[in-house]
Amino acid sequence: MPCSPLDPRSEGCNRLIREDATLLMSSRDVIDGVKLLQPKPDNAFAEREEHLHDVSAPAERDRETILELLSLTPVDADTLIRESGLSAPIVASLLLELELAGRATRLPHGLVSIAEPAPA
Image (cartoon, rainbow, N blue to C red; front, top):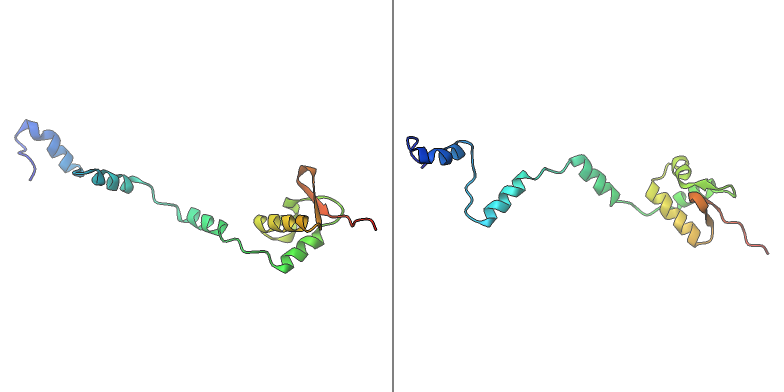
């Protein structure tokens, strides 16, 4: 029950009650109140974040697509992404894989080319 509206000492308490103040009796009440003030996550952001963690392994046809686009003429990864239609993480993964296998060569300025065959 609120304090008497006629008592001037009760004016502050009565105003807080009128403005939907929350009664805090423990630290848990404070924590719960803070949680209510935190913004809800944006669904679009959550979907984008979920998509980032859902990168599937490249398929053999993806590997062949990148190999077809590579030549002795250096090209940057952005061009490979655009021309292959593959995602950036897939192209990066394939380029690393091809480089480790000795089938592609990384060059300065972010360029990559097909590895030259070793002289016989």
